[in-house]
Length: 226
Ligand code: IPE
Ligand code: IPE
Ligand code: MG
Image (tube, rainbow, N blue to C red; front, side, top):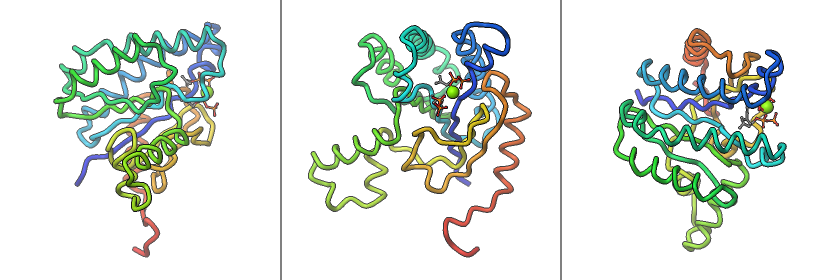
């Protein structure tokens, strides 16, 4: 069986911080620890080939400048840990619109992608400055420029998206909201959706195990009678 593509909408850092009487930034710092936990869980369970993380949306620029700055610096710190990715044999790719991102961050992102490109155990797709609608528009423009849009079918379209990755099998959103918030709109057509009230920093291995188990009990029809 093919390994799974598990995507995460990491929501609830701000509320976690508020609940504990900390500034929002502490929630994001704590959230990075959950990222590490999730990556290790997926590596160790042996059933996941691709992990996608929704790190920062194209709409998150509308947050206060100080929070945006904090998120950008946390991201830069995280992608600079190339050694850790190499040790874990994790290939890092980005689903990103690079336009608005600071030059230094883009440099670190490209470096991380380049240095981990031969890693084989798992792909970590970081959706940073990502918007599903923007990705669809971007892909249409790429195909139009190549003169291939007119004849493009769904397969060709998917191949030309930010990364040539399989569609997600499951998406887990923490933080209690039941929406996609512009995440993987084209790719999620037949994705199994899971919503949890747990705030992202509180996500545990037990809950991850539970979601994986529940996923295995979902019947995926893809429109057919089976
Ligand atoms: C993290 O959670 C998601 C990001 C945009 C980084 P939030 O910052 O949205 O946390 P809540 O929803 O305010 O609790
Ligand atoms: C979704 O969370 C975006 C990320 C997790 C990066 P938001 O907190 O931005 O989503 P909304 O505003 O509740 O829809
Ligand atoms: Mg939120």
